[in-house]
Length: 522
Image (tube, rainbow, N blue to C red; front, top):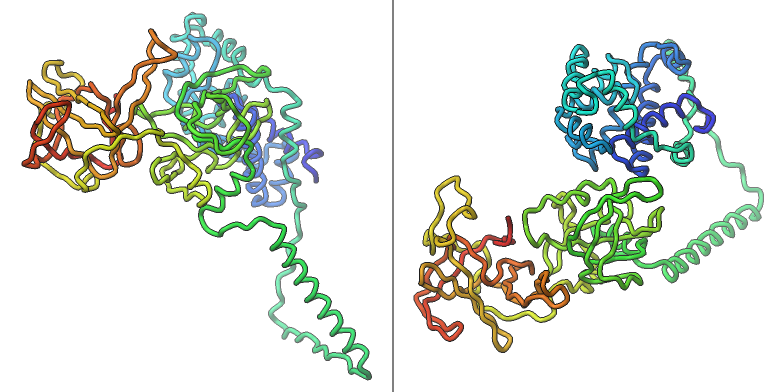
């Protein structure tokens, strides 16, 4: 039976779609979750006895019907949790209701919403959320007390939840478009009869080739074989000439995304802003262009729709300069650039010098040679620093310049008088860095691969020009420390020699730096 003519599967799809939309406000995520949920229920029913499956499809409350409802929720939730944290409360417009839902434990909130939004009975909602069915009244009362407009009334809370249901915005057109992706369910097949092992099976008849009374049939077979071989040679030659070559290996998927994308770009992190487009809340991110690798975009900041991608909607980095990202984008349903569907369409550029990329989970993502060679994400004019020739992490010193804070104390909470400061100087394409503490200064020698550059720091007083700030870049090409940055202490090893910096001759130390680290964090 086709999906369009199957009322049971249509109902299942629509229920799963609304469930996912209520928790994500994303039509794309809702459609994907609904497809997975219906397929999960189909697989469940395929394993039921014939009578139970037929009764369940007729809506007669047969054994397995409630299990299917719970399974539908579980499958839709599992699809959502690949993109949205389970503890994230759904968005609603009323601030007091939003705060009340956020204050509930994740399981309690799911129990409440399954009953009030998804219309599951108390027992089914309890099973689907893993909660005790007898606790619903207590959860409702606790939520109602936190909603000022409900006045502590559970009845008023139920009305507010109904009014705030995001699925009220779901249109029949959205559901119909999503249903189009449902595969037709294969008809049930009758199992073959069990083999009768009481009789000896008859061996299959042996077919002998017909006798050849002349050479005509042999010649025809030779012609067919030769013709087929020639056809294969022609197809192989055309494939070699017309189809683009693809190197086999892990980089092949990234090369495929490059071919599919309208825009391929290296971007720096920027602001994220919820925006209503065609009545739907979308999460739009401003992405500052570092390097355009493909496409006709000429804007300095691109608007990218990252709705449903939790790692892009909510960046959790504590670094002031999180790593650049390599994005493979196309124009989405609203005409806004959006990452191509797939795990590899947004990669972290973990090393700007090599360059090297990784997935959002930190797994290496090899780049095709041509793409890797084209990436130029480092500042154009780097300055040389004095280096030791040793890689980051090679030193494990006990010596400390400054004051190490007591165990468990945040270094940023120390008084300014107890902090040391990085002072930098640049001249003739070279830079040097001093660390000054308590009237004493030492010259720093850096690990191999470190450089410096002058970056522009935009200020409110001069947004067009800004300040020029000397910055040290680590071995991966990302900012390690700025001039005039303060910190309680650094670790290092005295070299036993002296050096010049800013017209001063001072003692030189090799600074100890962890691989890929930065002091520019909060």
